[in-house]
Amino acid sequence: MADEQRATLAILGAGPVGLEAALVAARLKIDFIWLERGQAGEHLNRWGHLQTHAPLRTLVSEIGLEELHKAGVEEFMSPLDELATGRSWRDGYLSLLLETPLLLGKLQKSVEAIAAGRDNRLREDPRKPKEPLGPFRIFTRGPDNKERHCLANAVIDCTGVLSTPRPFGMSGLPVPGEASCRDRISYMVEDIMGADKKKYANRTVLVVGAGISAATAVNQLVAMAKENEATWIVWLARGSGSLPVRRIPQDPLKGRDALAASANHIASRGEGNVEFHHGAWVDRLENEGQDKPVKVTALVNGKELSWDVDRILSLCGYQPSRLLNRELRMPWETTLDLPPTGIESREQDLSPGPSGEEPGWYVLGSKSYGRASGFEVKTGFRQVRAVMAEILRVRPQEIAKRLAA
Ligand SMILES: Cc1cc2nc3c(=O)[nH]c(=O)nc-3n(C[C@H](O)[C@H](O)[C@H](O)COP(=O)(O)OP(=O)(O)OC[C@H]3O[C@@H](n4cnc5c(N)ncnc54)[C@H](O)[C@@H]3O)c2cc1C
Image (cartoon, rainbow, N blue to C red):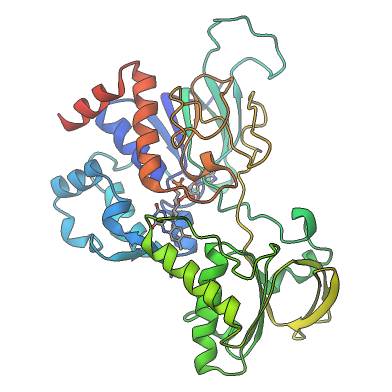
């Protein structure tokens, strides 16, 4: 076939975990193709204005620091012992690494992996036990809509979850009327105090959700309301508790826990121009015309309530997309959408999903946690090392030794 690329390994995605996979592969001299739908750190940039929950030092790897040191660009790094923002994590670490001799020219930007399957087979074709299955074939679309295939013996899918927000309607379905109000809804915490201030100051804002993103938004909106007193926040959570945000016992990410505690305090005290309702499902949205507020109707403990709101923050989490993996035998776990990571080790934090049926196809990073929150990039770095040991058929300790050499 014309214009095919071939390599031992294909890495999909250039977030923190995809970048770590590329670093490790390059250091171990594994030849690889590396595809990214946008730019490196594309998803970090979407929340570039927000702070990380822990200092940058916890978000980078030893070998990443070594490569920056060798390239003599440490002075351009973001400070390691301070909290980063999404943007400073990207600009002061990921983007610098792309320019180091080890990774220079390796990333194919603006190339999306659309679908993948086994070369010369359909998913339903019979397979004999222990039969060699051949490489994976990946269909990609690049700049100018250029479409091509590439082949790789192993694939590391680190495409994250941020592009597929979960709907905020009843039973996890889209809300009737949502599409017609799309321009008033954000599925991420926008730059409330900065570039997006006009959308929030002295406006009525609906926040739906009870995770850390919702906690972040509510904290910021309350701060905004102190200076812009006509700001009004309607916060709806599905659960029955008056403390909506679940706190992780002894949360290692102190910043995350502080946000959760503060948001729970706001919900229980009803302070700061906030009305909080638990037991609430959004039932419908009505677009009453451009420049007019959206009419939101919700069922709150079975009773119908309505508000006219200017902006909606739908913060109900994210889920992995299955489109890329549709032609593969992927037995997803059915509660949290956990994919099989493909990692042989059954260590729970490395591989929370079920066992797979596609040897050589690995799902790492935040996508490996499906709908569950709580993934930490350090876990992703450990996943990367476990996979490289499998690809090279050596023990994990051997990978550590080779990387240190
Ligand atoms: C406010 C905030 C603070 C956080 N603080 C912390 C913290 O302190 N500590 C911590 O460990 N984590 C933190 N996180 C979470 C952390 O950002 C994520 O866990 C991390 O980004 C996951 O990395 P990843 O490489 O798995 O995926 P992502 O960063 O989501 O990267 C996926 C990449 O794949 C690309 N992609 C998607 N689809 C395709 C495709 N089909 N083809 C090619 N490329 C594709 C995307 O463009 C993207 O660049 C925080 C998150 C937020 C929002």
